[in-house]
Length: 89
Image 1 (tube, one colour):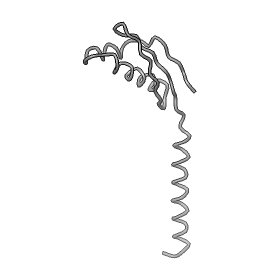
Image 2 (image 1 turned 30 degrees about the vertical axis):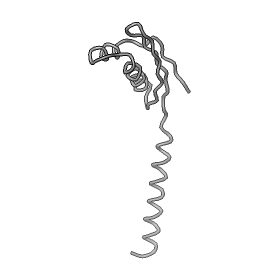
Image 3 (image 1 turned 45 degrees about the vertical axis):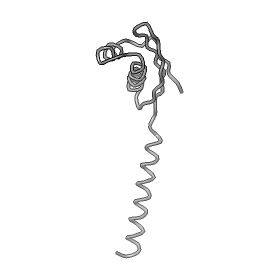
Image 4 (image 1 turned 180 degrees about the vertical axis):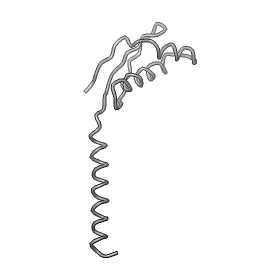
């Protein structure tokens, strides 16, 4: 390969890496605090995800992991509507 081809390949690689880095920072992240009341207890957890629905689901799962005991309770807790959802910036 001649020098021009090598430089072109290196430049293309740099552009590709730059694009990957730029696009990863450009993703909007949704941060929410979800509070769940279950079994006489109330717990709030914060989660961050690419969509608001994913963030709410993750925060709900995190809160239920602390309150529920066993599979049945966990499923029931995760299906409980949040008592509050707060969008954080």
